[in-house]
Image (cartoon, rainbow, N blue to C red):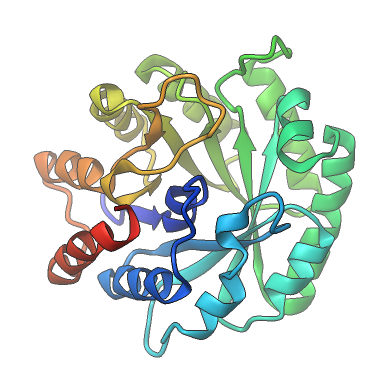
Length: 284
C-alpha cells in the first residue's frame, strides 16, 4: 500500500460558508496547500455565482496563485458546458470535476438537470477536456444511497459507471454525499466497481461524522483504495446533510491512519503546519 494519492478539498470546505471569504485570504490559503505537495487540489469551481456565491471569485483566486514548479494538479468543479469552457481557458487547471448523481432527485437539486441531461453534458465536457488537454473526473454522487427514496444498488452505480466509461471517462470518485456509508458498504462498493472496471482510476470522496471516519478509511485501505479526497480539519460537506457534524473526512485523520499503518505520503509537513495555522483566517 504505497503511493497514496490525496486530493485536498478547500473548495468543498469553503463553499457552504455564508460569510464571504476575501479573495486574498482564499488565495493565500490555497497557495499554502499547494506547497504541501498533495497530488491534487480541489481549489474552486466554475459554476453560477447564484448557486455557489462563495466561489464566484475562483478565476481571480487562480490568477493570484504561483504554480511554478508545483507537482500538484489543480481540479475545478463544473456543472455545465459554460463552466467547462471557462475552466479549460486557464492553463493551470488540469482536471475538471463533474458531480454526476446516481439519484435523479439529487441531480436535479444539484445541477438542475435530469440524469439523462447530465450524461449529455458529461459527453460534451469530455470532448472539451480532450481538445484542451484536460482530464475529466466524475464524482458518483449519492454513490452509497440517498435519502429521497430513489432506487439504489451497487448494480445501478455500476451501470452508470459503464455509461460514463463509454463516454470516455477514466477517472472516478465514489462520493458519499450525506455520510450514510459504513465500513462494510465502502468495502463492498469499492471492490464491486474496481473489479468491474479495472481500467479506470477510482477513488473515494467520503463525508462522515468524525467518530466514524477512521473505521471508514481503514475499510477502504483494506480493499486496496489508494485515492482519497479529504479536507483540512474536516470542514465542508453537503449542506443538505441532516447531521451538522457530517463534513469531509479530515486530512489529518487520514494522515494518522496512514501513519498507524506505516504508509508514507511524502508531504511537506512544515508546509502542512503552516496551512493549519493559517486556516483560522479562512474558517474563523
